[in-house]
Length: 111
Length: 113
Image (cartoon, rainbow over all chains, first blue to last red; front, top):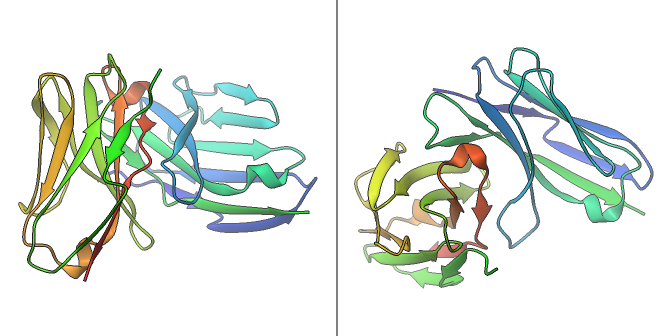
C-alpha cells in the first residue's frame, strides 16, 4: 500500500511569511501532483511534476520533486490570505489509473 | 469549457436507504474517478472508470458500486447506508488517466442520519 505523509498537518502564519510543506513516502511515484482545496469545493490542481529533481514555479509557489521520486515539497514565498486552504499532494504509482492522496496540510494565513 | 458537474450537491438519507450520485466529466475526458473525503481519513479512492470499464477499485465494501456510460458520465451507488458513509463524495475526470492530473467537481455532501 502506498502512503503519502504530509507535514505539517496544520500551519497558521501571518501574511508575508514563507513556508514549506513536505510530502514523503517510501514508495516511488511516476508523477506527483499538488492540489489546493477550499471549503465546500473540490481540490484544484496546482502542478504536476514527473522527473526526479524537477523544480516548477507558479508565481510565489515553488514545487520540487525529490531525486528518487519518493518525496516532494511546496514552498510559498510571502504568503497571502488567498493562499489559505487545504494543500494535498497526490502520487501516481504502479497503476496509472489511481492516485494516492497525502494526509493534507491545512494552511491559514492571517493579516 | 464546462467543468466537472456533480449532482446533487447535498443529500440527507436515513440508515438503510440507498443513494445514487451523478457526475458529468469535462467534455473529452474519458477517465472518471470517485473519492470519499472525511476529516479523519482524508481522500480515499473508490474506483476509476475508462470507456465504461472499471480499471481500478479501492478498498471499500461491495455496497459501493459505480458505472460509466457511453458519454463518459458516471454514477456511483451506495446501498444499505451506514452512519459512517457520511462524507463528501468527489468525482474527478482526466483526459486518459489520473497521472495527467484531475479536474474535480465540487462534490456531493452526503449525510446519513
